[in-house]
Length: 149
Ligand SMILES: Cc1cc2nc3c(=O)[nH]c(=O)nc-3n(C[C@H](O)[C@H](O)[C@H](O)COP(=O)(O)O)c2cc1C
Image (cartoon, rainbow, N blue to C red; front, side):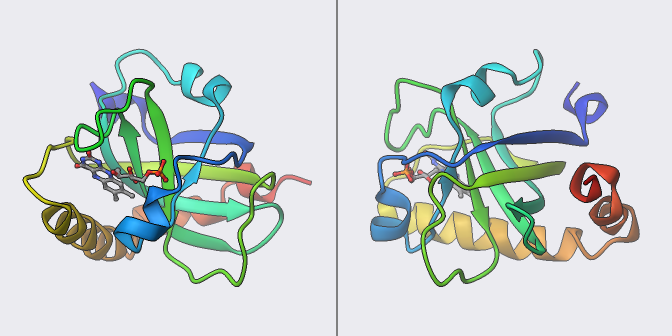
């Protein structure tokens, strides 16, 4: 199902999440507003995805994104949280974030401990890094979505 929906292109302003990503997980995530979450196509599975991200008109970086309810934290609202695989010097709330979701890694899981969640995210980042080296994935960096004026 999901494979027909991908690649999926999303764009919106970065809003504040619960702020647990950086502090507890050592993995900052950029959150989209509800309007972007509500625009997701029917049939998109919740879970962890990989792809490309661009903040404003900056460079395009690899990313991993969690789409769903974060069972570990039992969120009430669905969210799209993007971890950009690049060290930014400062926060970019209110900036425009474009993401191209290229592929699916796994379903959302609950974990017995924060440490287990952190380990799973590290593994996701490692896998995303490798999958985005494939030519099919790299082609999307030159897609008009990122390059239109
Ligand atoms: C790559 C990645 C994978 C994630 N996988 C899960 C998961 O399997 N289960 C879960 O409950 N949350 C998962 N999360 C979500 C984290 O729990 C979430 O980013 C954290 O709650 C921080 O949210 P906040 O910035 O809104 O505070 C994942 C996040 C990322 C970036």
